[in-house]
Image: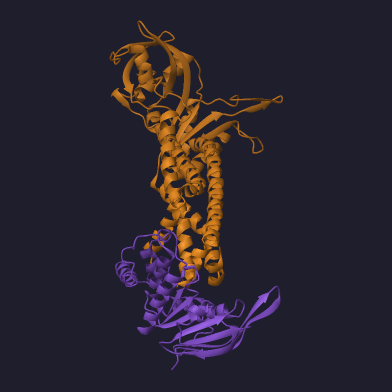
Amino acid sequence: MSLIRLEEIKKDYRLDGVIVPALQGINLEINQGEFFCMMGASGSGKSTLMNLISCMDRPTSGKYILEGEDVSQLDKNALAHLRNKTIGLVFQNFNLLSSATALENVELPLLYGGVPAVERVKTAKQLLEKVGLGDRLHHYPTQLSGGQQQRVAIARALVNSPKILMADEPTGNLDSQTSDDIMAMLTQLNKDGLTVILVTHEPDVARYSKRVVLMKDGKILKEEKR
Amino acid sequence: MNFLSFLKVALTAISRNRLRAFLTILGILIGVGAVIAMMAIGNGAKAKLEAQLNSMGTNMLFIHPGAITAGGVRQWGAGQKFYPSDVKAVRQNCPAVAYAAPSIEKVETATTGHENWTTQIIGVDPDYFIIRNWNVAAGRLITHQDVSGGALVCLIGQTAMQNLFGSEDPIGKIVQIKDVPLRVVGILAKKGETPFGQDQDDCIMVPYTTLMRRIIGTPNIGGLMVSATSSKNIPEAEAEISALLRQRHHLAPWQPNDFMVISLNSFVQMKEAATSVIMLLLGSVAGISLLVGGIGIMNIMLVSVTERTREIGIRMAVGATEQDILMQFLIESLALSIAGGILGMILGSAAAIVISKVAGWNVVISPSSIILAFTFSAGIGIFFGYYPAMKASQLDPIEALRYQ
């Protein structure tokens, strides 16, 4: 059974009363443990698709089966719960809370998951140690380098032990050395059994993936397996 | 997410903008301060008034000759005069009246061998002391025998005593009023001021018969002083006395009363009306300040929601529900308004204490006013914080994350 199955997914946007189709019937299956990559130019619909898969948004029509359950028309609270427990998100600009320390940032999903304070700190510490930031627990994002910030973000994405890690241009704001470190980390996580979905427009980054899907005009143009 | 976590997030957010938070709560602070000060002053005035009224006597009614209109001129106190027989009639015919005494007073100069003092000379009978709830501090009261015999005795109030006798014991000594020698038989207990600022201890009491015949030389009394059987029976006593006096004065049904019956309650109402004007004024200042303060909180919370759009997006992306975001901002505005409320309580109490020291007003800070102010500021926090919090919780996570 596939972890993610999309059936005829369509998404329309309404701009000044005009309906703009962003996704025009996507069919896609992603299996447990895959390192999957979505590529495409801006406006190709890959961000829209990413938002749907990460449960930030709902499709206009079609079915999204996540772990065997149709989640395409769930309400906002149920989607928030899935983002909290099932899917971890990593962004290009890290999206850390600037007013919170590394530890507090990593604690955040646990906080919304209703985990008691003592356990929160313990789990968040473990994750930060895992990404090599055991000595940066009480640093604020501005006191950390870009690579370190992205590692905090990865720790945060993993803290609730999700099934899927979704990374949107995770190396877009990093130099090539740091990018390689981050991609190595994602590869290692994938080897340990985590399903990784990567969204990028850089072929250099896409080469880490075994399965690449190229999008154009809201459709899947081609699929490559390596 | 539990309340403590929400509170921690809210306090962190507030502490990032201390000056702004302080300016935001200023309106609530002033409003709550005004409420506390207002209630302290109002309660103080009320407590003082009650104490003074109790010193005057309970369930009292005064009956005076009324104003009559003659040739277009209204003359105060020119109505039919009262006589001691009226007192007897009221005692016998009015069941709602517990006690009745004649009321007759005259300002005269009293002299001893070496001092003189102009004071209120009050004509009394034994009922007078019951109505006024007054006793002697030393010596004895004026008795029925004193009254019927027109005895040359008097009781002396403490202010008059100090001025006439200094530290000497006056009992047994002679006071002369208009060449009438009166032997002091008792010293009156201290009473203090009336609600109208009159010193009740500046007086000399003599049997009313002595005052009428020997000092003033008049067959009539000034009026009647009466106490009703209970406060509930005051209107009834008033009606009974009116009916009786109309009959005794031979008034036809179409004629107006030629006398006035005034209850102490009407004075209370007068006095309370005056305090309530001040209360209303302070109350409206407080109300407007609280309203403006609430709008200030709403305004700052709206700014805060906009400023923190990305933060909200991040929180939603990692699993915060609408409810979580709503609670976060609601608790933040609640924390602001309650902080304003607490500071306002301190400020208001301090102001009340300063007022009591400087102006010499009686102030009472009651727990109920503290509870009221606290509840009110919390209510304002929730009421004015709800819209911004709602707005925050309705943000679209994708849009919010994209916000710069």
